[in-house]
Length: 72
Image (cartoon, rainbow, N blue to C red; front, side, top):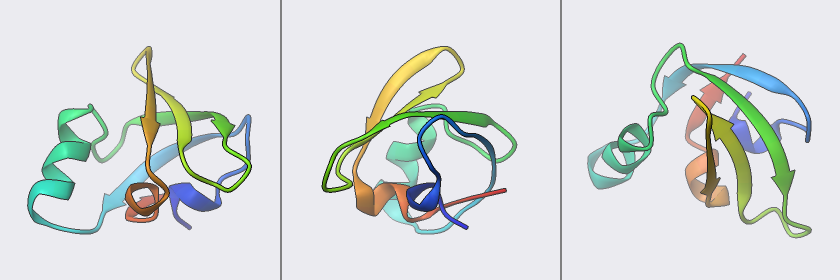
């Protein structure tokens, strides 16, 4: 399951970040790493962006970026 599939109000744990290069580095620079807990606050009507809370910070992710973050 990826972060894109998570419903609003759910809390999930990151298991893996697929992808490589600048995209993966940008996601990791946001503090999203393996084992971190993510709370999904809001999803735009068309699914882009996904607004999340990570380590006390509120962030927005593009749908494509959320699709490479595997969660449980």
